[in-house]
Picture 1 (cartoon, rainbow over the protein chains, first blue to last red):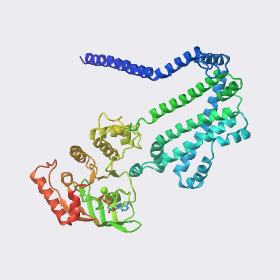
Picture 2 (cartoon, chains in turn yellow, blue):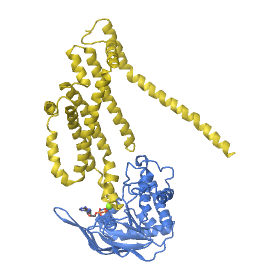
Picture 3 (cartoon, protein in one colour):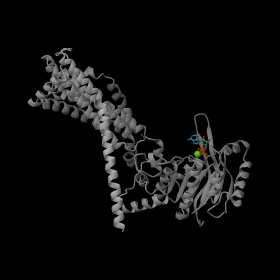
Length: 276
Length: 261
Ligand SMILES: Nc1ncnc2c1ncn2[C@@H]1O[C@H](COP(=O)(O)OP(=O)(O)O)[C@@H](O)[C@H]1O
Ligand SMILES: [Mg+2]
């Protein structure tokens, strides 16, 4: 008797869940269709204008020509090589600069002494315009990976430093009192209150750092490089190979989207507890 | 309910706050003795030093004169033997209900797990173990805070206007939940309020404070059996008794108390 009831309950639940999944994916598909309607229309118009020879093939190669150039870069392996080089620089620069920013932000945020010693110096260095040191970095570190990684690292450092510091200092005093009442040790106060309370700010710092990393990568590779997406574009420009320039732009965009999606996923996972 | 030995003893307590321009005397010559298992309510208009008194007992505030002893020992700082419920629930927003209750204790510990489950039952939050504070109503969140304090087996539970921010119906419900907990666990409680009905409904004893400087103005022992009915003649009698004490306090202070908040 009870078994039958369980079965009934199970049976009642199953179609319900399936219906929900179908409806869920349907909604997702429909929003994708709506969202891509305009870009697709734009590409079709662009292709048609090119076919009718209404726009210059040198300045505006048609989407199909660009795709063809993409295919060629793909097949020769040039694409993977240069995209990989760019990705590596961005990851290394972000890891180095962002990691240091996070660490130093934690130290300075947790200790008034460290703040007195370091903060004014960091704030001063922050005021040095980012682009202005690009040339210097190339002089110091050459046109290889190092100069790019250092420039990206320098850019990534400050947002993470500042937002980690802010997150720590903005920890709710009222919750601090709760940890006193619950007799937390100083170590537990840091690990179980200050750090989790800083996560929302740190995530903002990560997002800003990635945006800076991406911008720095473009600048650094266009100033002088022997590999990477920026190099590919500069090289193509020198040979008036506009389709390849477009491929470079598209790939830079893809890189930006990828980093944004990663941040979004991490945020959704880490900050599920937040209001709205 | 069995009142036996003295748990909390306060003698000649003076507390003043130093601000840039002046010095405010928040408490003057407070004498109070609370016995094991008692439920004491403290009532008075805002600014009369209720929170200050509770914070001193909790060990959150140590700059005072006089003697404050818990179980014969001077209070030197906060600790889990003194549970504290603030007016706001003050939950950790990134922890679920059960993790908020456990706080720094691990739910993987079998003993902690069992006690947390019991407390969730006691504060009537079954089914909400995995919810985040953002999904809770004010009353539910305050019940989580109470469970968090009770998990540590405090010798005394200090509640600072714990239901002040709740609507009348939720407040009445919470008062019943709290009485239920007190009757089951026998935890000694001191609850601060500015609601006369709440003070009479919950307390064995009511301490009436007056402001500027904060002094004890009256003490009323409420020898009504629990559960109490707010509409009963006995309840009304004690209500008037407390009101009468208030009328001895000067017009201004009474005006503030009458305003409710
Ligand atoms: N940290 C503080 N600094 C200065 N004055 C304070 C402080 N805390 C409380 N007071 C003063 O002490 C008096 C009592 O305050 P409080 O205990 O909060 O009253 P209640 O809780 O009864 O409303 C008030 O006059 C208040 O202004
Ligand atoms: Mg108060």
